[in-house]
Length: 61
Image (cartoon, rainbow, N blue to C red; front, top):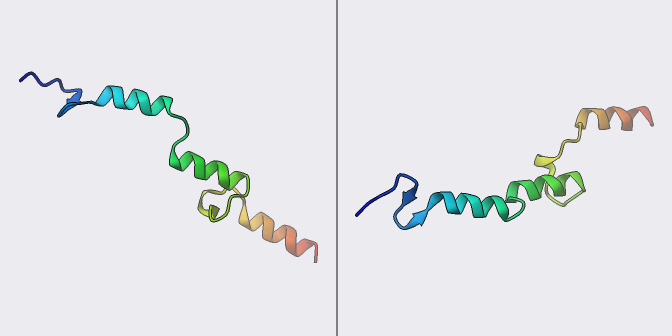
């Protein structure tokens, strides 16, 4: 049996990578988009500067 280093068992790893690249956003990318648009439970992925928000809130009091 001839095994190519690009294959694992009968799976063509390069083909899987190519199909994944064409399939759209990854799970992590979707969470990042949701965090930027106000998705629920996505605070870890948010790029909001928490300290700046606190300063803004306290300056308006």
